[in-house]
Structure formats: structure tokens, C-alpha cells
Length: 326
Image (tube, rainbow, N blue to C red):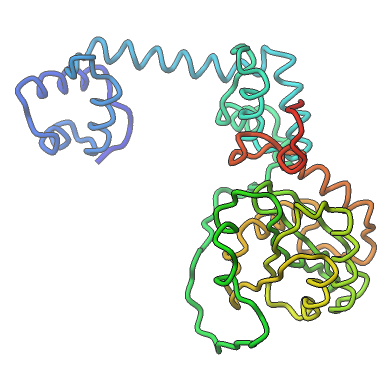
């Protein structure tokens, strides 16, 4: 069965068959179309009285095509919009973030509004040089959540597991609950990351040595500049670099919890933030010559990208309760 669009003559046949109340399954067979195609055509083009008319269906289809083409040309004809999109794409904002941010910042100026799909089409058809700034360049991928992995359960009596955290942490109702991990370079050097759950704010520090002592020292120094009211809990991976967590607790005031082994999705905010940081420091890259200044620059860019889940505010704006800016 074909999924292709219905032709004008098939619309006439469909209209006649619906008038005599032919079942959708039979219509699909007679028109040699998939049932989904028939259902979509009928529902997209029906009249207010729920009836389907071939002539009106054709008019609606034509109007949608005109609107779509106008949106695609909108970027080419609007210099401000085109420059804004290019500027933000080069900062590695996604098309969805760009579209959402424009609608939030200029909600009453419809001339600036654009859909994410139109931005994607513009990039892939007109500006292929910008594809390298997109996070997903090889098509969509499916992330697996909750996979059960057979493992030896290794419980350490002292460690507080994630299910012992206060219930408020899971709700993301307050600022001050963090998640932490490290990302690994090709040369086995590490970058330590912390992500605040509600705002998505990312902190990152290069580890000069892959030891628990160095991790503790960097963590204490980093959180010294964070207000006490924004330091409640932190949930870590089970890596040996977090072995001195008791001293970290004492010095930072954060209550430390641990995810279960191999349950990376239990620290979903941090895993996502690490993925964003990988745009700047990919897996095949050596971290030996990476400077903290380079990491700070990348983190600043990430923290100033709007997020859909934040209503297109940035992590920086939510964490520090700042006003919306361009």
C-alpha cells in the first residue's frame, strides 16, 4: 500500500465512498492507499460539520503548501532573522532552541517567528557549512533507558544510595540539588562535571590527576563560590574518583548520594550536560593540553543556551534568576 499523497481524482473517489459510508479499510483497498493515509487525509481536510468534500480538501492542501513554502523563504528574505539564526547556530544552539527563544523574546512580533523544521531545511539545503554545528549530524539516535544489566551487586554500607534522597530532589522544585561525574579524554585525562537539576547549570573543572584527592579538592574549591542556599545534595556516579565523598560533604555542606552501579539514567541531567560538553571536547580528543580557560568558555556557551524544558530560558537565567535577554 502506498503512503504517497492523495491525488485530485482520488479525493473525488474518497468523497463519494465516504458519502455512502464505506469502511475505511475498504476505502484503502479500493484506492490502493494505506489506511493511515486515508485517515490523515480525512481528518486534516474535513469541514466543521465533520464531512469531507473533495474541492475544499484540495483548497486546504494548497493553502498549507503555500504557507510551508512561505516559511521556508522567510529566512532567505529576512536579513535579521537569517543573521540571528546563523549567529546562534554557530554558538551550537539547536534549531528548536532558536525558534523557541525568538517566540519568547519577541512574542508579539510574528514577522520574526519561525519553526524549527524551517531552520533545519534552510541549513541542509542552503547552508550545509553550518551542519557541523548541529549536535546530531548523523540522524536521530535512540537512547536506551532502564536496561537491566546483569552485575554483581556491590553494596558499600557507608554510601547513601539515590533512593535515600529527600523526595523534593526528584521533583526539581528547588535550586541546589546537583549531579556529578567525569568525562574521559582519549589520553585517560578527566574533566569533572557538576549539573544543577532544576536549572541545568553546568560546572566543569579539569582534573590535574585522576585521583579521589584531586576530585575532592576541585569540588570543594568550585562550590566555595556557590551560595549555601543553593547547596543541598549531590548525586554521584560510582567511580573511584569520588571515594573521598565524606570529606567533600564536610567541606561543602552538600549531602552526597550515589546512583546504583551501571544506572547512568539516574543522573540524567548530568549525562545530558556531559553530552553537550562533548560537542567541544569529543571522545577522540586528548585532554592533556586543554586549559581550564577553554573549559570555562565552553561551559559559558552551554549555560547561555535556551532550553525547551525551561520555557526557553537559559540555565544561567534560571539559576541566578536573571531577566530574559537576547
